[in-house]
Length: 203
Image (tube, one colour):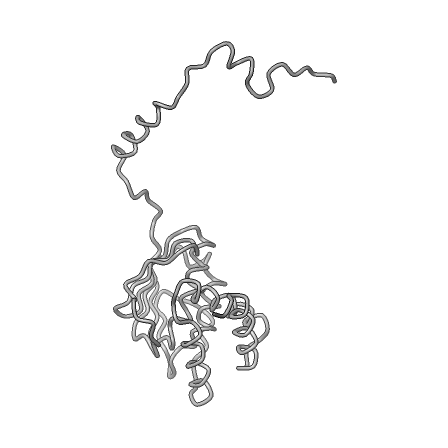
């Protein structure tokens, strides 16, 4: 089994060989490492994208808007992802962003995952019928179960989700009340032995 370090290094070098800058290649290396760590087919999709890139032109999306439509060619997932991550602070206020026809969109996904960490919000990513809930670049919940190659998504949707507890206020109070059983009433002996007690100031 290949280590995550090997996966990152080879993905980075292959990306540079495919014509990207070293800076972008570094980002792709991190991304493929993330995909494989999450059990998603990063290497498969990256391989296929670079094969297709030799035969086909892809559009570089530099400025992200609320709705992003292709002019002629499918969007490059790597340049689109880099632009999204770079602009994430200004995009947060839009709440919902749409993209038309991103090629090999699983390569776009880790950029969104990392953006979730930057803004401190969960992001919902939809690739046509597949959904991914990205949690601060820590984990992913998804209905995408097949380790397959997605050549293109007709519609890619990103939603910024407001942070909220997964439990009700009454559930929190119940648990808090139970935790109170561990509280110990403070006695004189506890006060004397508390941190810092008995120390003298020599200044």
